[in-house]
Length: 491
Ligand code: GLU
Image (cartoon, rainbow, N blue to C red; front, side, top):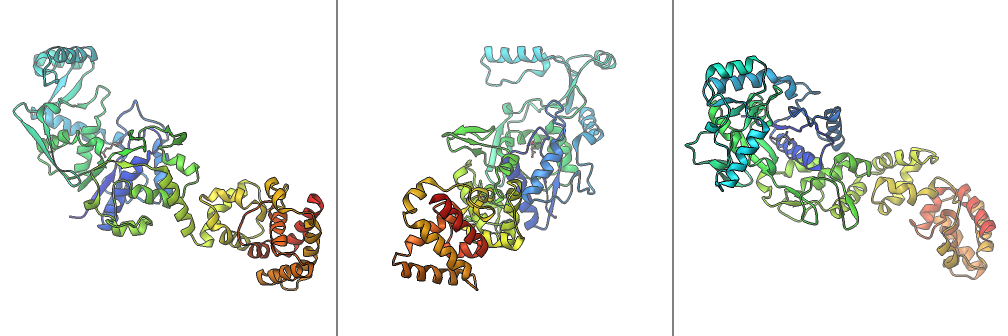
């Protein structure tokens, strides 16, 4: 049987990093088994539905590099892939359960339900579920009364009739092994709501069955619901998928990762889009999320998506919660940025430089710049500040460096060095260095007396890549101009 897995988000806002982790693990499992990765939109909770959220989450997973084989935008034989377009199917299966006496109509108001729960608490019952034979439903009302109520257009829901004679529910989970739930933990779940929409539980199991899903890989928060799902599979006589529940994500302060939160003065975001806006590399996010719950069994930490497809295994998914450590994420971002070749790195930094209105003479020039600067940036956007002088003459000179490096004779030396550089026929690292050293000898000063002021003059700052390569990249004319300008301005 070929593997079919699904990512089944609810379009209630932006894509959470935990959601993308779930999507990723499904994707990796599908790809390594030559299986199918399905996107299903679970939009049955109309109160939480957010317009445009589906498009946004498709956009976010695409940015991260994941592709779907089937889904609302990709098509496929098992569509429609949006639950609100499948209402007739859920209705048909709910009707089947009603006919078979496995579900019932319920008419209780929220107040009725609250009162029943309070009563159970008062009586200190270990089973806090309400007694269905004390409530308003098709099991306690006459058939005529039920019919009249419904015909008059009064509200009702349809509930699952959980068998009373059942002790426990046993789930075989790939990550957690055997997990048991006691009967009292499984309540008469609403299957069809008063607005005519199914609940998540009903829609999810009908769709997983009809879409031929072989493995349900999802967050651990769904583990308790799985008991109900198992019961529904049994009631329909369907074979359940393999259950795989991924560990929860925690912040470094031990709290569950749900909403963004300030930790030790730093805001920890939870949405994929936020990390995109903060200029993280998508490859770094994928790598980071892969390691949140899975490990390769050795010390390796750097993985590209294609490596993960080969290396990932559900057998190495951990039970214990995973910690979202932004410091590690930043480190991985740096690693992925450095892994890019000059062309790819230039393409990554270019939009930021353009947004800063820098004049980029050519792509070839930009590639030379990133070659020099690749070890000096952690984010693509960092080049805007760190590499400013590659695109415009310095407007000011770093005060501390001026104080430390610009000496009484610096202006004079800068002018003479400018002269030497102007006279060079071949302008490259070697010839520049030779010119600098011969001038230093001529003037009987240490090379440092020329090196540091020159760097300050051409870049405006005290640090940067190797001076001679930097000058070569900047070009003869620019270097000469900047040396003379600094000599004038710094005196
Ligand atoms: N719609 C659920 C969610 O938003 C999906 C849970 C599942 O994968 O079964 O997470």
